[in-house]
Image 1 (cartoon, rainbow, N blue to C red):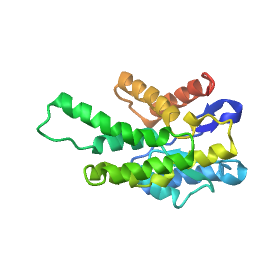
Image 2: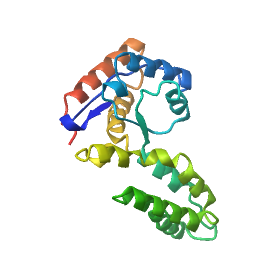
Image 3: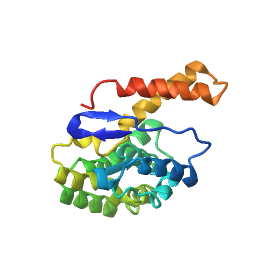
Image 4: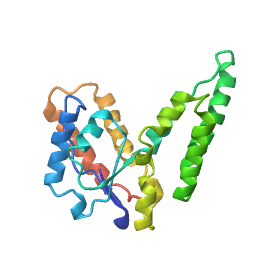
Length: 211
């Protein structure tokens, strides 16, 4: 999916039927996109992705000459899952404890300025590294790729922040695909799947503007 904040639009650029999400499959797919002219030299500014291992490995080969941003939704979800609570607490108490701790982690990216983000990040690491080592390790892993959007916004201050730090628009399209798959139950050939994807892509690309 490509986003053009200046033009208030987003489009599905391409899709591919694959057997896996290993690096080799991603390299083949991304390489074709680059051959079509999708690269930094032609205006591409940012690649937003979920941090999957196969995709990350492929982006070291096909890097497009653009910066990377990890999806904050996926990052925060992983942090929340890594937060540990005492077994002796009731389920309700554990949920409240986890939410209270998670609030401190989430606040890192609620800052308006990059320097504030760094201060909050360091404070959270110092506060929780002994009591929440798994959550802190998840936070620290590739943290620099979760704040790229701050630098993009310095160059393009009119670009809405919400579209620079998550893959939410792509996830919306994926939900449409999953819904069609559930309704169909099964496709008897790749041709049927391709026809469905082509139809959903056309519908999505003709839908409402980006914002």
